[in-house]
Image (cartoon, rainbow, N blue to C red; front, top):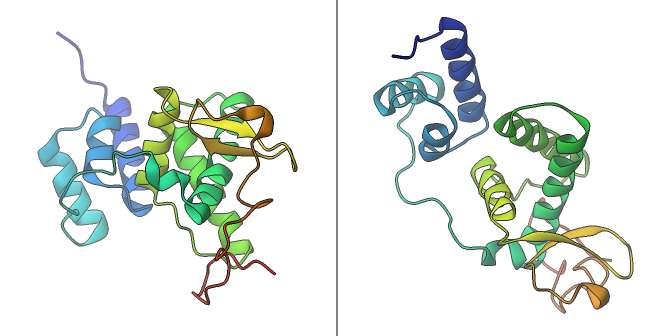
Length: 178
């Protein structure tokens, strides 16, 4: 029989509240805490004032390969990888901190954060499972999210070689190419 620690439970509730404030889906909370589904549901409603979104989590790596999402995912993952090396934190706390820093960077650049905390969490899971990786651009030397079998010696990122229509749209908060 395992003795329930009030401090451990309090830390889990605090972590769940942080994730809810960042917009995490209920499935993320279930996966990253030991709190019951019913408890998480009540907590979600209390913190956000509404019921959690329904439906499945994103499960495809394809979204991370499109132009703007790839730049955002790469920014987040580089921050995450740095924190992973520089700080002793639980994995989910690294995701939370990296996501907060990612949001700060996009706001500072006047960009809309394209990556939700749920997608960021999923991205880390894809990397952990070898489905995605970071590859160095042969032109700018930046690290970008790619499939693990990408030809890394000749890889050129979406910033150095943007697609023809990239950055031409006028959408508020999107990356503009000049």
